[in-house]
Image (cartoon, rainbow, N blue to C red; front, side, top):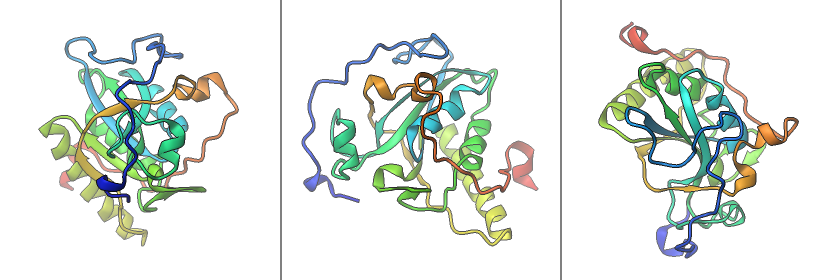
Length: 208
């Protein structure tokens, strides 16, 4: 990981995007309606990661962007240079009365391999790291509890240690328009996500 002193300068102007979700038809831009909660996940290339979430019932919108680093409003090319500190992240806006945050975290862990460090499959680089960025104390509690429980299951299967970054959400910088809902616009586009095949415990299972 690059240190802040060596990060690219970036810019003050946010990325220009349509703000409309290509699949759901909803707004991708904060603020969302009252009662809608926001969570952030990084799990490799954000094209496939975004689709994982917007296909879930209870998700009202998603967007892809850059998060967890230092450079304000970076471009895709800058993020790929490894000199921003950012991960490719997915904003998930969801209705907590219809979809629990624990389900989002379990989906996150099951749909990629959180033991791979600064890569995911053939995608290698700090921007492809695994991360959960929480927005509330309740999200932090759930994320940490589920990560610990999932590690226990991975260890039972003699899998590696989870390398997922767990941190409070910092600024989220929207990615370029062509990246938003990319696999809706390019149905046969690249998706390199692959899980471990180990199920993730949630809810009452956490006390087992």
